[in-house]
Image 1 (tube, helix red, strand yellow):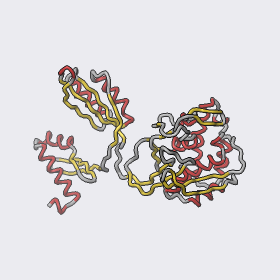
Image 2 (tube, rainbow, N blue to C red):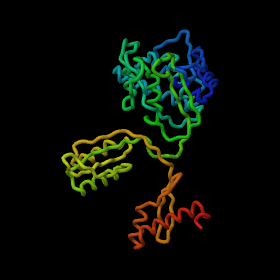
Image 3 (cartoon, rainbow, N blue to C red):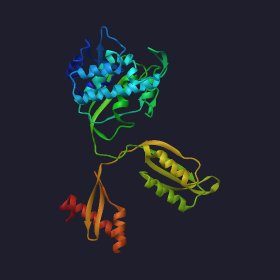
Image 4 (cartoon, one colour):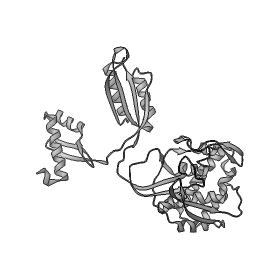
Length: 374
């Protein structure tokens, strides 16, 4: 499905087919156009007459290194198989070199992994981002018998990744697919800010009733918005702490990397006045913010939920005023003089703060549009 989606997005199919043929499997590579619940998608098929299914890591890497592939593609494919081998070794309690790659050691799975790595190179993809992963549910038949979905290797590969289960009670994420995203994805979650250049759909074998059985890829370029687009909003109600304690806690959270923090007056239960503390933080900062809230305030519990945001690309521009330099944060559609810079100048010079801000704004306009400033 991944190979099909990347080819549908523009990766050259003939180049992929020739590279896979160079691995001397004797496999037939086929490309079809199919519909899945009304969605047109590319179907990538690997046909094999007879081939061993059990291979060790060293044997697979030897096949990859002998193929007509660039060094970067070979390195990516090796990384995927090593990540997969480590997961299998953990599940079976053996050394990675002794792992028998069963289904994933088959020719079609090797072609899938190499095909993805090659397609990413053909498209010039520098970073790969993956949404939350639908693992499916139920059971799956394997060389080790009937196993729950996700299979043990898949579950190991997706540790600390966002997953869910929806749709038919089938395996929707295989160890092959899990290994690819675990080894190659830069991050998981919502889509990063980007300008979409092409879109591709890759089809699975079955046509489900519940949803289109396709994988979608979107190829694009960064829009320049460098801040997180997926954030955590953290809230706590406090009605028995002094204003000094609340203010100190807010300072500590901002110093720890919170993106924003506000204090909202609130009427609490039993008529007591209190405050609602609301903090916005990158997902990786969540636990650190929790710790500060519990240490520095009297709250016994916090609420949190994930949110999405969009931010403009911005840059810092230095503007010289008659009293000193003020940094200006400039976005695509607006700008704002840095308060701390203007405050420092106002304190040192005795000039009213509003005058410093106004002069910094005029200076910024003079830089970007001299005619307007006059």
